[in-house]
Amino acid sequence: MPYATVDDMTRIFGQREMLALTDRDTQGVIDAAVATDALAGAESEINGYLARRYVLPLDAADPMLKTVACAIARYRLTGSEATETQPVRDRYRDAVRWLERVADGDVLLVDATGRALGDPGKSGMGSVKSVPGRRVFSDGSLADYRFRE
Image (tube, rainbow, N blue to C red; front, side):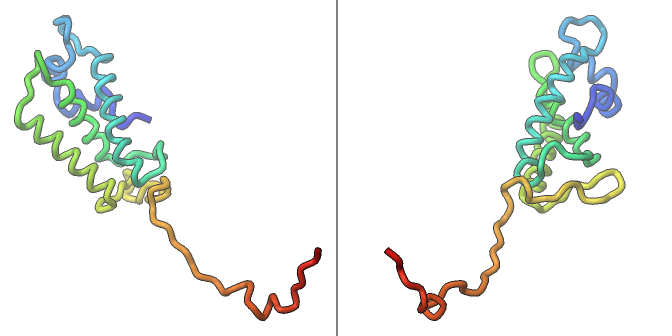
């Protein structure tokens, strides 16, 4: 399940912005393939952070992931025709900082109802706990043991 779609990006940034970002052939239409590629790259970048804390793929998506995916994709689409501006760069940096906080465990992902997603720490990167038990073998319990040849 992708974190965001081309329609999400269009709702967030508007038709004019999406044309500037994706219409490489100047046809006057949003190039969905260009936007989808940028969103796939954003999803990969996001998963790199989430994999430190969560088992992927997630069962549901935190609504904030849509915003973050769109901000990252927008930043990645800026370049020759659509120039990178300070607000675009700031949104990208804010998105990365938020992802770092998620990866560090300072922020938990939640679903649309506000419940925590998944089981943080089960991706193999969590902590290890051990409980000391009682000693099974001792000099006393081995006193009657005889080696047989």
